[in-house]
Length: 376
Image (cartoon, rainbow, N blue to C red; front, side, top):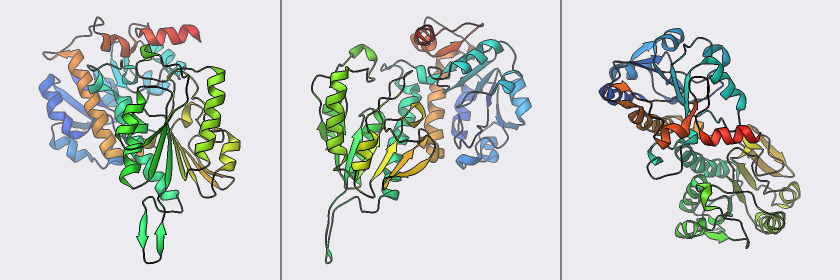
């Protein structure tokens, strides 16, 4: 049984599995680990490092053809899928809820595909939760990106030249990315506020030393697995006013609010951005799903009415080495569920295996993905 590690494309700097994981994979039961040439180069992981750990470096065609299981962060192209054989297994983070064409390509190819971003939000699944891992990286880097662009200091300084006031930071969405952003901004000395529609987020926000901005009357669905849910129009109006009032007083706004499978909630309107301080910075991590900010442009940094707006849903890739390390551990933990005593064992009675499987023998297995596809 052979595991293949593929190189990413389109400027992605991470790699799905890092060299340190190779010895454990061989102990797990893989007779061979093939790594596409240059797969880890952008993450400062050269081919020689993989080879020292017991992997073999090969060309793209060899990895695609000779691997029983393939690991790649982003979906394979349709042409690459055409080179696979029915029954081969692909593991990654494919965002199937937002990319139905990716699922269709997998089904047509006849392969078995697992998308770890569909892992249930349970204690048992935490070890392979790529969304949480990458959100941790993104939340941290969002604050650093904001600090880089901000024309003022983050912390308060008391100097002979006078006192410098600390930056005011507003975090929209207190999930994993938001909480990491709070923690990082606080470590840099900023005064931090955070908004979230989930009541459960309040205690976590306060525990990190930030102020919780609360709008009364939020719908809080405990069955949503920790995610935000769609709110009423009345709530949205009150929310918009409160967010506006706090945003115009802030030096930095970091947007992290997303609803899986749906367009990101609009939290910062264009008129709010226009009313913000000159030199203020917005970092929108929800850019790829429409953005929390009305003026966000995905993949671009723009200036709008004197405010810098950074639209980047892939900030994790900007810290490629550690992000790859975390992603790789998630993949290995998933492999431990489907490789038993050196043999592949796809047990669809396992809730994690079933939830993450987006294609198997020409059919969608994930109940959540099925529901989204039927609704669409």
